[in-house]
Image (cartoon, rainbow, N blue to C red; front, side, top):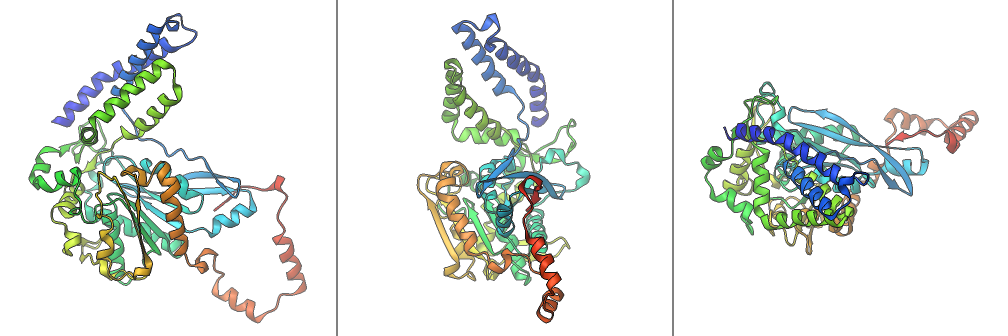
Amino acid sequence: MLYQVYETQRSLFEPFAEFAQAAAKLYNNPISPLSQTALAQRISATYDLIYRLGKDYEKPQFGIQSVQVLGADVAIQERVEINKPFCELRRFKRYTSDIEALKVLKSQPVVLVVAPLSGHYSTLLRDTVKNLLADHKVYITDWKNARMSPLSEGEFHLDDYVNYVQEFLQHLQKQYGNCHVISVCQPTVPVLAAVSLMASRGELTPYSMTMMGGPIDASRSPTAVNNLAMNKSFSWFENNVIYRVPVNFPGAGRRVYPGFLQHAGFVAMNPERHLKSHYDFFKDLIKGDNSSADNHRTFYDEYNAVLDMDADYYLETIKVVFQDMSLVKGTWDVKSTSGKLERVRPQDIHGTALLTIEGELDDISGSGQTKAAKGLCTGIKASEYRHLEVPGAGHYGIFSGRRWREVVYPFVKDFILAHQPRVAQTPKAPVRQVAAAKKVAPSASTRSTARKASTPAKRGRQKSIPA
């Protein structure tokens, strides 16, 4: 019922938000006679603030058009590699006509970034992806808004999340031989489970796992977020935060944890900071500081865009990760796609390097929670493990912003490169072709043809080549 009330209220307010946007533009338009006074600037700023407080925030775009590699512009094209009912495996395909840059691109490691399914969209990791793209082939899990998934798509459980990750890893292994995986915040737990299950079955596991700010062991340095999840009963969550999607969405009738409730929880953690930020935005508009105002808009366009989570997945995460602590206790059983229950055993992981990253001031995943992964992965050698604590960084600082770019990313890049086998960096020739090359020496005409084929085309005639 609460969801329907919220949607009704939002629909009723939407025309006023649109009016506020139009009024803000009118009072701020330099050719309008209404914009020539100080009072007009205040009125425009007020309407702009009303519009932003009342508008509906849609899913943002990654918007990464290009990156620099060896001084060359490399174009980026997004495409969906695998489309699942609740998630898309999204690839950032890179194109360049620069031959030297292309050689570098083709030799770079493959990375699967597993984004959080905890309220915000995967675009929250835009900064993470953008930096990775200069040195890696990048894929990301782009989670769907549950209210857009019809009931006919079935349910979505924590087990399904784990199975999705395994499927995506196996897809990249089939295409490239192997890959690396990075998990940020919430997915550190299901990613560790996925790799553990693959190891227990004797399957190939990723070259490396990088885990950033996640609740592997939420009992260590518990934060306000952890305390809420651990101190409220399972029935409290089921009765107080779970609602059915209204009839005006494709997922009508699906039980979800609504995005607007999650957003209210985000804001409630630091209400004074958000209030001050909005007031500063108002003052910037009055002063005509468009740069600061645009920074505010950019941040809150992302921060205010939230998605609904399927109720089964959310409630099981609360129970497994925060209340029962099944991963830490070694009692977590995951149902495979065939319906078989498999025990999660991180100690079975061998040959996969591990990097854990924590922020000194993280108020979502406390100190030691991510580092706890090493204590569970006893099969990983000490020489294959690294830990990084980022001084002065909060939760978002370890994967976005200045500290991510200057401190964390160089460390991650070097770690991945250190565990990328050289033989995997260049495409292997077919076995028959290699054998034939050993037996038969190339003829003169063959050598001549090879020389012509290896001569770069003139730059004016080059085309963008994918990597």
